Image (cartoon, rainbow, N blue to C red; front, side, top):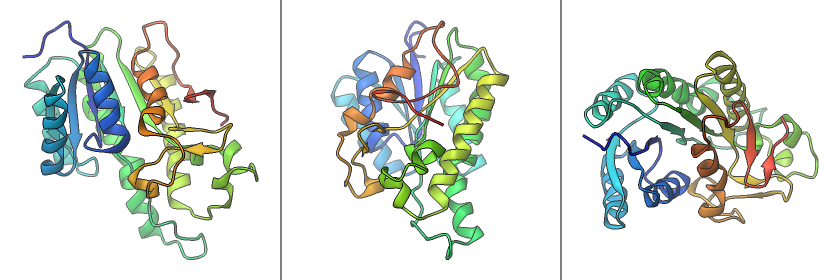
Length: 247
């Protein structure tokens, strides 16, 4: 069993990129890290690396598109703790950047299955463990591409990225997060974009072929900030590392 006084966090898509860096940073604070990974081999390699660095890590096989996998993740986490302090819904799919004229429902659905239905599956399944915590927090990793204010600003690079799946999925995730925040005030639900909207910068990850200008450490700044808020902290907000992001 984990120490009942130790803060616990489950991070989906935790084997690389933003998820791994968030795990590393929170692990350094002494948190118990439940490292969710769709690929079990990569997840174990990532967990071993964090453990070698001194973190307390439990690798959790977790495919957010599978009800069965999510149920298995809940059972595994329950073997180690009777509560979950923080859930970071980080796992995401970029889609294939198909233009609106060529996009099909199947293409949209495959992205939504990870970016929209995935966070709903995981959040719903872990609600009992979250409710058992004294100060539960949920952080949704969204995108500036999910902001109408950003997408309709011609100066923003994403305004020129003509696709349907990714941006609309993140816009949906933002609304879902707000609705959770309104309906479940006992849990803090917030969302982040791992970029700097004002400076038109984004984080270099596998999802963008490492073309971003920010490091994963910089990109995880708002994730870590919202994961650490206290009981008087905000809920239903959308931020990047510099501050509030327009809807």
